[in-house]
Length: 231
Image (cartoon, rainbow, N blue to C red):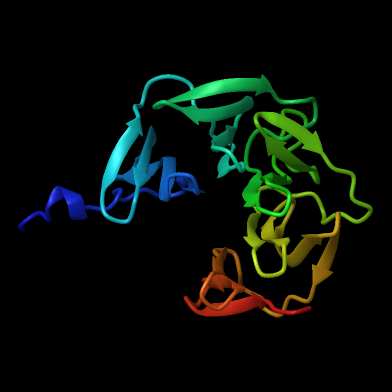
């Protein structure tokens, strides 16, 4: 088959890659992921960027990189692993070690424009497979928050910033069981919203900028469903 021109190729197939929107450069940044060539998967460690037209590797497979999560923090693309990282001049640069008790893997991470910082919830530490830590990260500095109400501890949840309502929406994840709950973080505290679906193990959250709503993609049936409204 004829290959498309280089300028029209996407970033390539990979499962479970970390992705973040780079607001300063109008591009998607993708780190790692897994490709399956046979029965065994190959774990990728390179970082690529996609501007809607062209895909390019911006950090090679060598060196240290964060694998807990990546996000825009209001100033740059940052990452969380054993430390905080920043993407600078074609390399992942270590900023600071994580404070004790702050998750380094499987955390939910997004950009909170209202706080002008990356925002995280949950994840795993060396001492616990799942946590209920709420934190912001700006310029490599992690600030843990102390909301009165917190979602149950978890890892591998999904979060997205709701631009229209200036709040973070959190959905699902896992602790001892697979979770199906929906929470919002607004005015410094968490609040649970009703959840009507029963099969959401593969769901993802995205913000629909055209309609100004958060939607859930995939619910086990492939359907697209609204998950948050004016509640």
